Image (cartoon, rainbow, N blue to C red; front, top):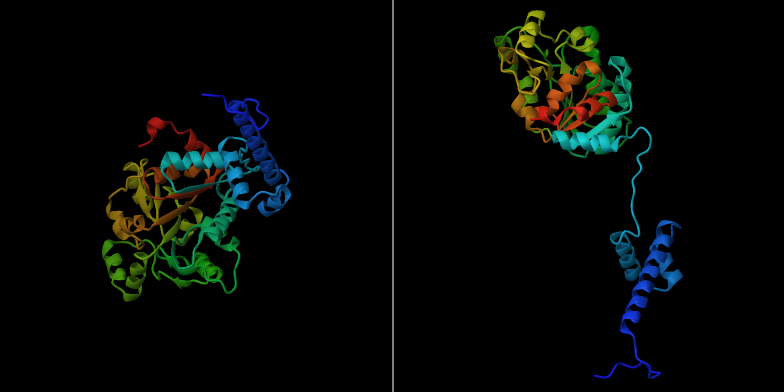
Length: 342
């Protein structure tokens, strides 16, 4: 077979031709990528500049990424801990983690956690959501007060108390303000639980739960799309203690003997997050553990060294699927040995 000839009669080197074509393709690909990514040109401008089709520009940009000519690198700004958040979410099976750039205890972390929670809620609440919220949390109160009102925009259908909101009159106003402020900010209908959070006996609890007003709140719990709660330690927070919605010192000693490390809505669990099945649960007027766990999205906000054991237990036990916490707690969760995970 005779060698193929060019128009000049000279043999054609097909390999050289292919190489030249490939080099030109790469050159054009690089040119398009630099115009788009470095000079900020939009694709229609590149079409006019290089006199090639829109489809070819899009194809060249996609190929540039595939071949590694364009590499996207995300550089988190100072105070954003994306790698740490991803590590904790993956390790503990959480939907999302927000690590706040603050460390300390109590009042040292509450304002920052509250502000971060406000932003999280503002960006993730969806119209038609039904939100349950625990009543006695200074951090949640700080979050709600930091949220911005959006007049005329309704981002929640209902906001429902998850625990009895009646307590010492001097502090009950804070639980009421939490609900009222959140309802005002989101345009939601507030649903109050007009009962104490903890009562003296199961008989008293049963009598209160039989009241139609209380029954209607319990019915609303079954339709929640998300819940936001604090995580309590065995020692009650100052706000909860002042409200009177706590177990006695004798009851706390019993819980401690059973291995309790923390609670959500006054339902206590051990270091692995396993619910402690005691008669104390029958004295709580609030959402029951099974109904709570059935809520599709459960957000917990808690921080401080004192609460680390409770926070760790809550995520291990599957009590929450979104965690908002401080940097110190986050680092301890990340450093927890794999052998200690379930």
